[in-house]
Image (cartoon, rainbow, N blue to C red; front, top):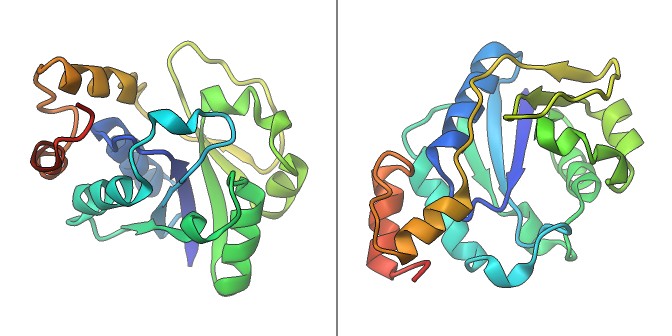
Length: 188
């Protein structure tokens, strides 16, 4: 099977993530999309993140009815901070019958050369890139494919701030995720 890996903090997962994953799965040769919940992104501050199990649960709730989506806690059991190449290597060893490709926003492609072993990721795995507002990626490589997708400018920061201020987040996050956030009083 060909698996697209969609890494993220998902703090919280929102409809932008789901729309992009759905479009990428539909318009490429990928059989499934695995949401890899990152416990600690090397480029983000840990203190702003909800506990990893809450973020994992929100993704589980958000994708529960989608046949081609899975969620993974693989990075919860790996050294931190998490590096994409280490996760790709681990998953390839654990699932030798699968082919893995990275799913990346155009904004991340600009800094991709700073990633640990980015050349290995390109050569051995490849990348599907979806557009991001205001970004014109210029990195060219035979294993980089650009996917036509809607420009999504939904910010998890905006969602967290809205929740803190008591504003509605309806239509920004799935109802099941909103219910979970309210029940657990998250982001307050």
